[in-house]
Structure formats: C-alpha cells, structure tokens
Amino acid sequence: MRVPLAKGVAWGLIAGLTGTMVMDFLLMGALLAVRYPPLLCFSIVGDTVARFFSILGLGLTAGIPTGIAAHYLIGPLVGAVFGAVVTQALTLRVDTFKKCVIFAVIYVEIVSQPILATTPILLKMTAPEVLQWYVGSFVMHLILAVVLGTVLSYGLRLAPLVAKRSVQ
Image (tube, rainbow, N blue to C red; front, side, top):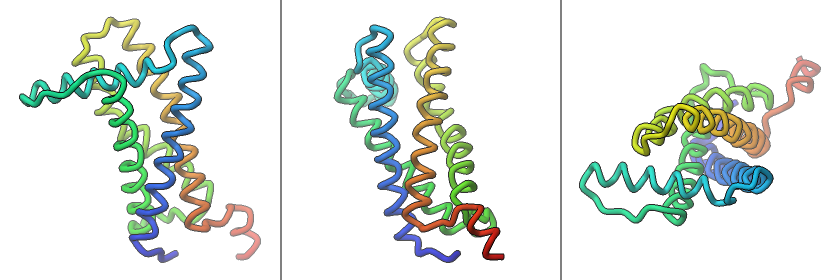
C-alpha cells in the first residue's frame, strides 16, 4: 500500500479531530453521570498547561478555554503524525482495518503518557487522584484511539482482514 504523505496527514488530522470530539463528548457525559462538572477535564488540562508554561516564564491563563484549546490542538496533531507514520513506515505493514486500530491504540496510549504524567506532577495530586486520573485517561484515550484507527482506516481505504484473506 503506497499512500501519499499528504493524504495520510489529512486523514490523520480528520481522524484525530473526530477521535477527540468523540472522547470529549463521552467524557462530559460520564462526568455528568457521576455528578462532576462536565468541563472538569478541560479545567484540569488548562491548569496543567498554564502551570507548565509558567515554569518556562510564559504567562498563560489557566482554566477551561486553555484546556479546550490544548485538547483540540493536540488531538488532531497526534492524528496527523499517526497518519504520516502509517502511510510512510511501510515496514509496519499497517494495511488492514484491524492492524490500523490496534496500532492506533498502542500509539495513542504510549504517546499520551508523557503528557498525562505532567498533570499529577504539576498539580500535586494525591495518590487517589492520580489513580483516578490515569484510569479515566486510559479509558478516554482508548476511545480516541479506536476512533482514530477506524476513521483513518476508512480514509485510506484499508481492507478488513477477512476481505484481504479471501483475495489471497
């Protein structure tokens, strides 16, 4: 499968944006269900970003708007990089829907770890808060990754594994 880099990046951007939107929609619903403010995660992310930039000597407003901006910059960017890797690293052989989704899950969960680690450190979370943060983040990023792999697979017209086997 030889796909142009631009097509991989474009579909990766679309897939990353879609995955971020689905993740955030489900996250807000889950937060409402457990009687937390639906925008709590955006607030936490915004506070983390502001604290990080303050260490660098740059003033940035904390809170929900910064968290939303961070989510919607990072999600599509992660998707674009994933689309580039999938289309250009042919040795990975990501040529079926199933492989694309599995690789997306591995990729997103690994790439998100350094970002997720900054929150408990910078916001000085307690042990129970850290556990809740990581469990929730793992589940939400799993959702993002499945959507990312699914949308990218659709955009790149990757065949289902069953269809590929029957052709061979």
